[in-house]
Length: 211
Image (cartoon, rainbow, N blue to C red):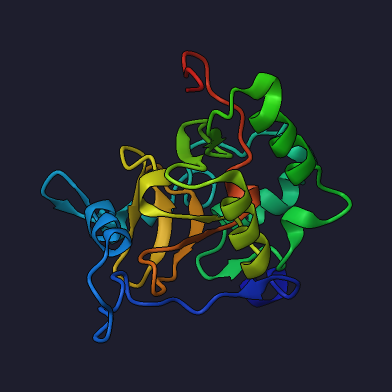
């Protein structure tokens, strides 16, 4: 049953939940910044979560159903399969850039509106809780270029709302409420959270302020 359900999804192979240490890197300001980004106070990043987060609940791994009015014309049925009934599959590479989805056009317009250039907030497609804010500590062009080149929205440590996000030991990135988000795939720059757009296309729940 599960195999048939995910025939059209792409499998992302998980990576270790900590970035490998470069042995030939020379000390520089960027390297120091990267090291600083790997901690919140004395807490190492990513913040690990227990496997019980993804236990079976009323709606797959979520206690609440997927939102039906997701942003950027994201398909709720696809979001439900990826976010709630899946642990390893993913939306197809480049979904965020497909004709049926208005993500980049709408997101870019919002970011540059009135010259404010405030980070775009990405909300849980189930609960509406904020999960990521981007770009933070880099330009919009850098965020967009990295995401497009990898095929999925890609976030760095400083762009994660750690109150609501955890990583499991196999690299799976999840919300604290059980939404499958994607995987942490570290590279030479540090942790890189490769995230399904369908999992973070929610609308803010009542009382949530978009910062």
